[in-house]
Length: 102
Image 1 (tube, one colour):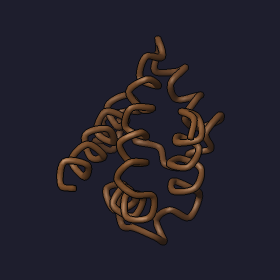
Image 2: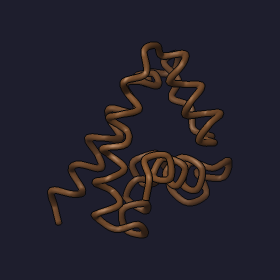
Image 3: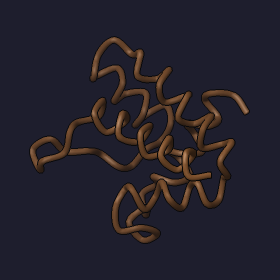
Image 4: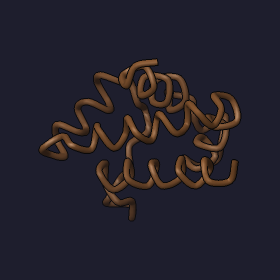
């Protein structure tokens, strides 16, 4: 599976407009993702996220995640979230944590 396919699966299929019906928070979405996709896909997705984080600006990063990959979850710094770049780093850490439990 190519890098963009991992990210499309994570963002488009898991963080869709009704994601909150499947989990109470983004960590629950990741847990469901790992359970459904498997450890190898989770590890590859974390690697794809690290490559995505090479985007030069937060605006470019947000555009990729929201527009190109169809993510409907938006971390809101005004509500105490870490912003898009920080959230993607947290996603990587969560995926890596699941991989280390395998």
